[in-house]
Length: 448
Image (cartoon, rainbow, N blue to C red; front, side, top):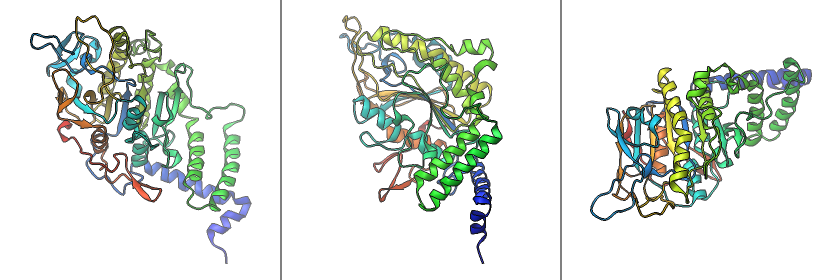
């Protein structure tokens, strides 16, 4: 007497078994769209369903954007060199460099007490994304995709736009299917950026399905001989996802159905190149982020890596702000108009900040500051028109309401309904977390 599993594996070259596995996998994937994968149940009440992370790599100058430091006393000291004004009913201080974003002041939750462990770009950027500043670890997007899955079985849970480093989207030891799907890397023309290896018109769809079924049958035979091989299992699932994406992803990348007014609001195609500011078509990224969020992608990272202005601080900062300002405002406007801002958490910030300049001293050079800088959040259950924490009078270090990257990660997970201490994965004989093993606190003061 043989088992049903054995019969399906041997009859008709194993295609019956393959069909059963495909159905089970599809059912599991669909279930994952609504329930956590690695958690038995939501550990806290979720306020947000998805995250859009606007990553400003290089260190945005907080004192000339969202952390106003006017001159006090008789002697001039480092501080803000661009004008600020109080915006909206909340009176948030926002620089004149961000006039369009400033119109959404009453939607922003500004964190002026951020701090990190190091002022080195590579290490702090890695810590921002993975919680670790030295070792390779899964990125925040991969952890969230692992913890919650995707809302759309035909799309990945995590998409990375215009990333320059694999650490932004790598899953490392998490199963491969939770890695980010990169679209445009290292300054690639975003209008030409595509998801690799999912398109092809050389065969009809039914033939491509049969071809993939044949390959997957061999892959699963290979997996049966290596039970528990998470990497191989992840490759198999990634191939299935890539096939399903063929019908959905290309349409999302095609902006031809957007109105001219929308393209103009997002500044799609506008590519400013001044000093450190690179022509990344940031507006296209923000519009794609909105479309992916609407389609059910859980975590979308948008990258603008031009903020490392050591020389010509004023010129380069002005160009960077001009590049991102209108697209960010358009994104917030559209999310709010569609009723999505309530359950979409928008996060803005970089790996650290910059020291202030001394107005009138003729110098235009800035460095790195990891001891006090700014992030802001919007939507996803956060307070509106609110400022949390502060730096000292010259903006050199956080002195009140201090928030470390670990705290930021714990807070983002909490807003998504995840206790950061319970989102774990065993690797190398121990449990790993996004927030690591040092103390991390959820900043409840940020919640509405």
